[in-house]
Length: 209
Image 1 (cartoon, rainbow, N blue to C red):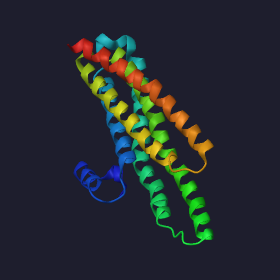
Image 2 (cartoon, helix red, strand yellow):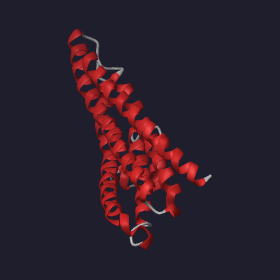
Image 3 (cartoon, rainbow, N blue to C red):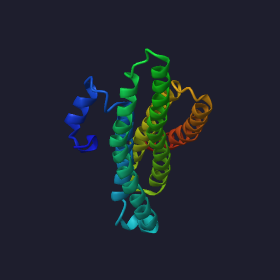
């Protein structure tokens, strides 16, 4: 059974244990899925309402995008665990001789790059989700506007959480050019989508106060 298929109770229990996976990356992906689903709920409460007939086609499109993103996030919960396993094993490789050191460095570098790829992908999905929720907040039912606000806050948290899993891996890389390029991508995603999420959340909050 994949981690995304566990009950909430079981997932939280294993997350709190000493088991190396799931960790912050998988948890971020799950939070992203939940945030996206909250935006999707706004759409579900909007479709079919006469008051919103003019935006129904947009809402249906957004719901399809949300369905896709939810599936992507849940797949990334499992994928994050899969890419961490080789890295955790690499840390335990022997380094007594020069040959062992060189081999460990080679294996570690490949594992670090693979381990970076998943949280970076989670961040990209969070950016997509935040833009979808922006539309839900603007066009969806006013009765569910708070759910759009909670959803975008969750996606922002998932974005920031995944970034830490990128940084901890790039910090250990010997290929500094590669690491700096990944960090630049991460920084750009944070700069763009944290600001957008804050704007959306403030807009929702201002409507409710």
